Image 1 (cartoon, rainbow, N blue to C red):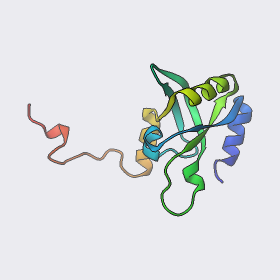
Image 2: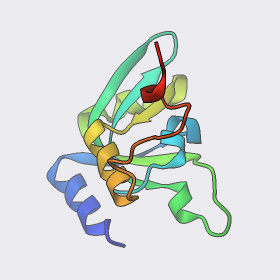
Image 3: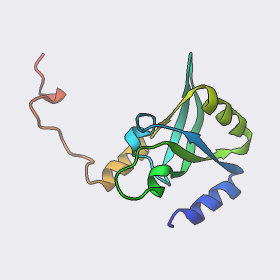
Length: 130
């Protein structure tokens, strides 16, 4: 597994623990999260707060399923040990959202060959007349 060594180094060298939290596709960038992604993590309930920045995704259940496209039900993160209790508490009482920062989104689009493409459809906002 290509990220195994990177994950072990991330946990050991950065003082992190591997922590799994429940998730759904809509919270996990439409189910597009995968090992190696770096995300910002938000907890929302009556209020919303960023509980982690630049957190590495270690695994998701989707990567461990076979056959048809599975829906995300958990995400394992490399969480700084001092924030692990906050993540556990938030995962039990709030909804957790994973956000790909702009540079990470650009990287994913680039890998998919989509970066720099223009939307030339008639419904595109760049074609709207005001």
